[in-house]
View 1 (tube, rainbow over the protein chains, first blue to last red):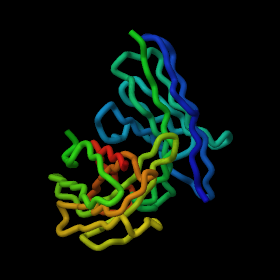
View 2 (spheres, rainbow over the protein chains, first blue to last red; view 1 turned 180 degrees about the vertical axis):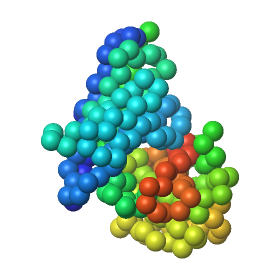
View 3 (tube, each protein chain N blue to C red; view 1 turned 45 degrees about the vertical axis):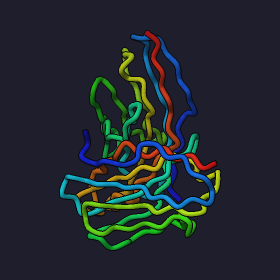
Length: 114
Length: 114
């Protein structure tokens, strides 16, 4: 079945460092891809998404490009801030499927040092 | 504030106790979900209610019993839990459990079973 694999954390960086969190997926169809973020003490919220190959999702300085050839959707940010400390979840959803069918990865905890 | 409120925020219970988790959404949504978040594991969907009807039970043990009295409220009744049930339990809602719908998450209940 469909699945998402993301790099295990925790990832610890200094402020203003470059961030990459790797995510690869397995899917039989043409999924939409997502990154969700969970700030301390809060629920998950959608950070960005891409719905077809070569699309780039972006929000709050974060970017991820849907790469069909490598089945990847890596999350990047050029200069992280302390406020970016959170758990990041990669997820996928098959085309036309319901919200309950969104498949999440195991999350990557990111800690940013001042 | 995402419009999805969960209580209590933290719960410690013994294996013989009975307790309930509560979720309330003020977004006018018609679908509500329970997820289990355990460390280093993918987010697990437990139950789905769409227009007050349970549409998904993801092979959840019977010691977890959901209740959805109306579209705004969702409960998870707990009895004779095991220590491995300790986790963060997240509630989510969406306009309906349909294609391209966005999930809105609560902050979760951190459950510890002693």
